[in-house]
Amino acid sequence: MRIPVPVTADVSDLAGGGVALDARIRAVWRGARAAGPAFTAQTPPGEHLAVQRALEAAAPGDVIVIDGDAFVGRALWGDKMSLAAQQRGIAGLVVDGAVRDVAEIERLGFPVFAITSVPTGPLTDRDGVLGAAIMCGERRVGPGDLVVGDDDGVVVVPQAVAVDLMRRLA
Image (cartoon, rainbow, N blue to C red; front, top):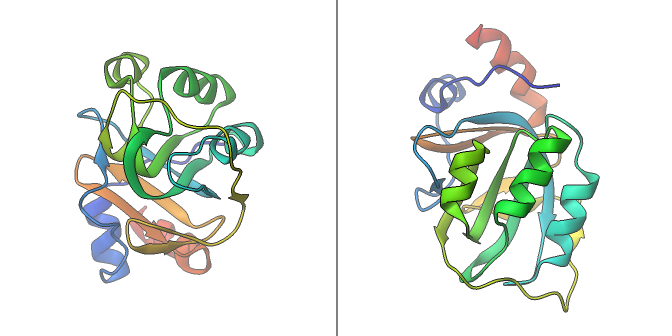
């Protein structure tokens, strides 16, 4: 189920700050907006297996959040993954790493937030971990935490206070 997408600045203000991911993680296309509970994955730098498994395991309405160790030498996500995520009802992607196929992702209208884009594809040698607390954009992100992204960046609100915060935003 999709939740209304609040403005990240409003979320940050109501949370009292301390919820924004590092500013290097940005929308890869202007106007991208996403909100939903975090589905977390951690992957070794440049590796794709856990990212693929996250796409298969995430529920409709989730925002997939990937700890890619801030590695930008290989893309962890692209247009084919965006199309599959969109078809599954995934609300968006946040990756502490790189993506590719930005023009096609924008054409699809799938919200993606990342450090940068590179043309180099991922490796498929090592797996990672799904559904655990991770670090993304120098912030802890737990499964089910509220993730909100827009042109200003990405904020993550701990699940324990997210419902109250959303109520106050309404």
